[in-house]
Image (cartoon, rainbow, N blue to C red; front, side, top):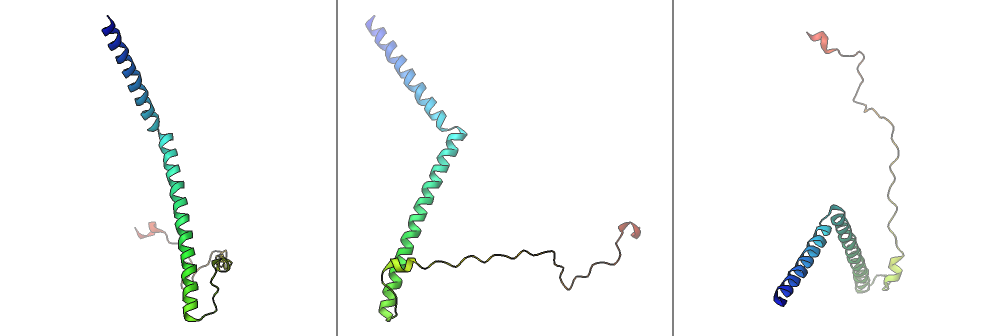
Length: 117
């Protein structure tokens, strides 16, 4: 009798455990959950890319200072001074109106395809 009770309880516990594990996995595979995981991975990759770019920039500034010293140029060796240099602002496109090229002359009369037949 105790044997049957033990195995019944063990089977019920295993069933509850398996059911909860399957439900947890199903929740992870919903479209919303997958989208959230993808967004988190994208943000994480963006942070890593930004850190890499900052490391590259610091290395560039340091190497530029080393080369400036080796060539005897008046370059500041500290990266803080080089950080003050900024990229120029992007060129703004002027708003263009409809421009017809000089080689294009508009037709003087309309062409009617029905006249060919």
